[in-house]
Image (cartoon, rainbow, N blue to C red):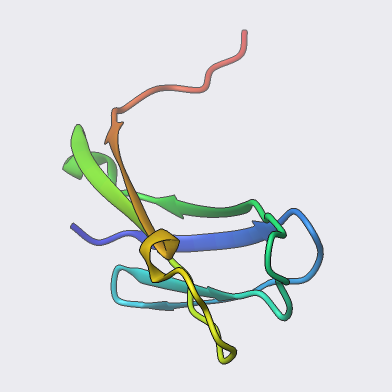
Length: 88
């Protein structure tokens, strides 16, 4: 399944996102310990591939010390179905 990266948004400012195959990597310039951020990545999937289940996996890492590596990865499965956006 091939997805097309559309854009990425970040709740706290500027975000830089790049696509490599089906992987989208977004870099947040600064996130301090205890801070939270919401990142939304929009992609499109060819209609001939629907319905399909996709897995979204988020990973974080840091160049500074992280005392708790157990909370650096999370995944969620999503069912993607075909729908029409029509107005009359």
